[in-house]
Length: 196
Image 1: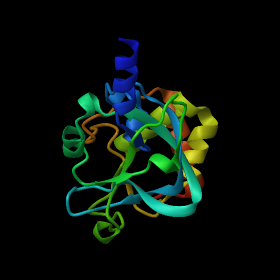
Image 2: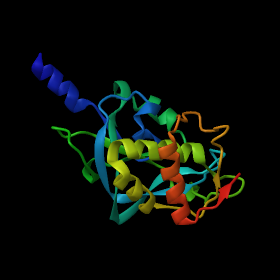
Image 3: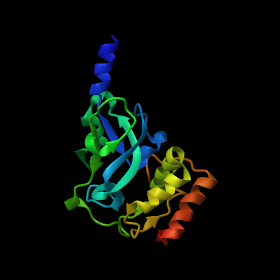
Image 4: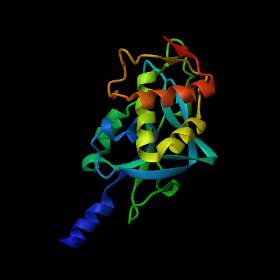
């Protein structure tokens, strides 16, 4: 029985999340735990598949980013691919540092470079989405992790739509005053362009 469970665990694939998936309030994926992805960094981008800018991972040989790994529900990549429909699934097992006690198949979702455009007035970053991401990083990695998130993400020249009063992001979360002040503090340091 124990050997069967161990074999099942070893065959469970994982994915690496580096944006909203770090916020475990937005999903119920099993076995979420901190991890680090080497050779990639985050960037804001827009594609024709979505109305707004969102995060993607882009190859960057000298960079590393923190995030979470979580088990693919029922080992069903198809269902997860449907949720992440704007992305390609890229094998990343060798690039992920994690605390699992066994070797695991791990993939990361990334937008194909040929499909990436910069965010714009028509396709801004949603503040409600950014809030969720930062809330997750604060919960898992603390304020240092939040600062690292802002420092290791490209594309902050894209405008940010302040939709906090009427959140457009479907998995938005309630934010404390401390959390929103932390987001606003880092955006001010970046001199980000905020649209009301």
